[in-house]
Image (cartoon, rainbow, N blue to C red; front, top):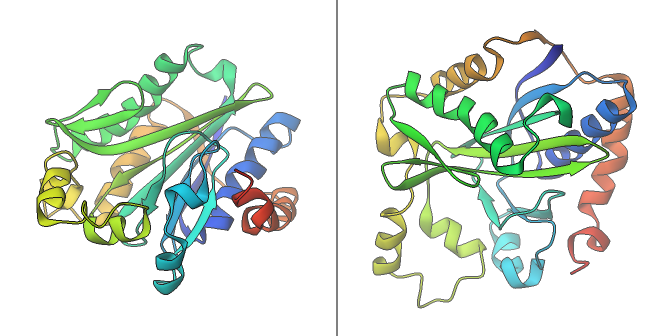
Length: 248
């Protein structure tokens, strides 16, 4: 099986989610190879899970003030702040048969690529079911998954750096929680690459994850097909729409 790899790129949140969905459709139709891709977000954004309420989870007012986008993912899970300079995001998309059948087992296999990449950087990471990666007892990565038309899409983030105050400002967190005590509490439960080793640069993180995801696979560097690019333009409109983002 040949895997297409889309090298690290930076896109808006609407483009990122549209690309993931367009590839999923292409794999289902047999016009696209199973795909691994890496990306960043610009501007920064908040994404909520498929079944969440935007108004309940996100401070729309603060997002607008800070030029931070917001949208609903097609995957489940919780609200996530995507800092344009603070994280590396991956997606892996393929037929279900390429992965373990069970949800937990598929998370373990895919998150294992991240664990291996971090270990190659000297960070002693481990998989924490059902979809997190921890260093010590601190979360450094979370992932989300969807399975439609027998196509598995999993995407997730690795925290390269973290700005907890900014994260709290765009999520609907009570003012009482945005305190030094609460921030210290979060810092005890969440970590980042920079926290673990400030000498690891972003490019090194990307290269190690690229190696881990493609190790023992027949992989080639590719680009979006013309059909995918057309579909991305169509899907961007969906992800920008109030009908999609505020339907709950």
